[in-house]
Amino acid sequence: MKIERLYRDESGRILARLIRLLGDFDLAEEAMQEAFAAAVQQWPREGTPAHPRAWLLARAARARFCWSAETGALAPAALVRTAPRARVA
Image 1 (tube, rainbow, N blue to C red):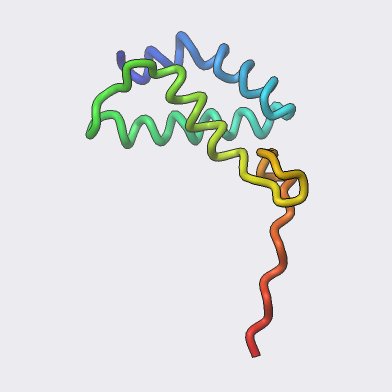
Image 2 (image 1 turned 90 degrees about the vertical axis):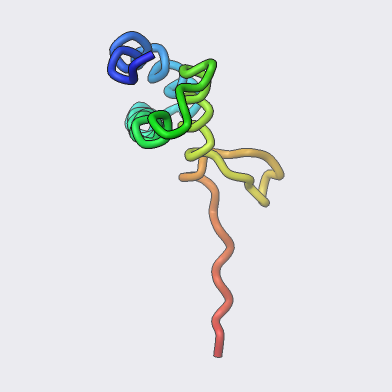
């Protein structure tokens, strides 16, 4: 499937799912664009995955979530505070 057609046919569904997942339109839109940009680079080399929409959703979500040591669970990356770096004398 061509990426242009996939974008035209599926971007609305992907964006809606990411908005529900991330709770923020701008963050979801940015994540979706990054996932499509990754697809444009990766798929010509490695081939289109068997489930392109799932690949895009996973790629977008993976970029926006990380492990929170505070809660012990996955959390939106924008909300996870990283530990301050130790100063090296």
